[in-house]
Image 1 (cartoon, rainbow, N blue to C red):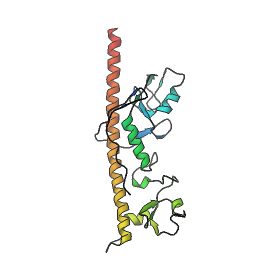
Image 2: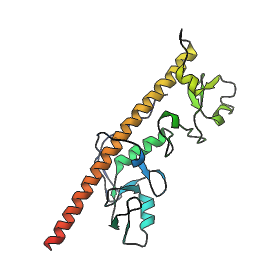
Image 3: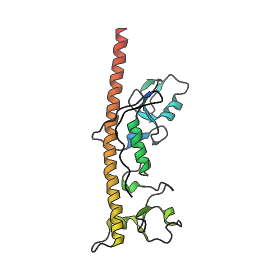
Image 4: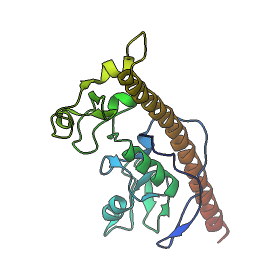
Length: 213
């Protein structure tokens, strides 16, 4: 079983909203991919004037009936207007969801079962697959050889058996996920920096126009 591919670069138009071109640089954390309104990973993310990102549905509902309000994250006042879509950040959020990570969890220790929402603490040797407690007790794995994930991760020394090769595959997949998560952290910070820079430039241009009026 392979790991999901990182989201690619691109620029497009959708629903009459301008979409941002992605970038890549160094960074930290996955917090930038979480909407502070619903406390979940971003869905159809949009950027408001201060540079913060929210789910399109969340911020639209929050803005209902108001023309001017405060950013739910930093408190900066902004005017209601068509928001700028951030498809790259949306792709990153979708990738994180594919990894089975819940908001607030990090790295391979935070892996959870996509079906049951529980931590992956077991490893099925026959299927070479990580399992949660519910998966372990399911008919699909009831008769399989299942070992604790910690044992599978460390493996055994000496001659490599077919079962240990399966365990090594799992370790390699977890290492690949950790590497991709680090790349995501870098991608998110770079994207946020670009968005804030563009929003600052937009504000300066608006102020300059007001001065000349």
